[in-house]
View: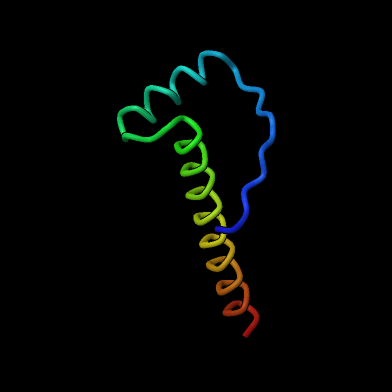
Length: 61
């Protein structure tokens, strides 16, 4: 994944409590849970972009 860079994250207190509970349920730190969720969201986005690109190519043929 490469070098990590720290940055401040402003988040609603209620959302943070939910994330902390979710992280605990999955035996992760809160930071680890946020990283995991972002990683999964980016992976899904890339997957959707690929599908869209393939559909557009097929429609153009």
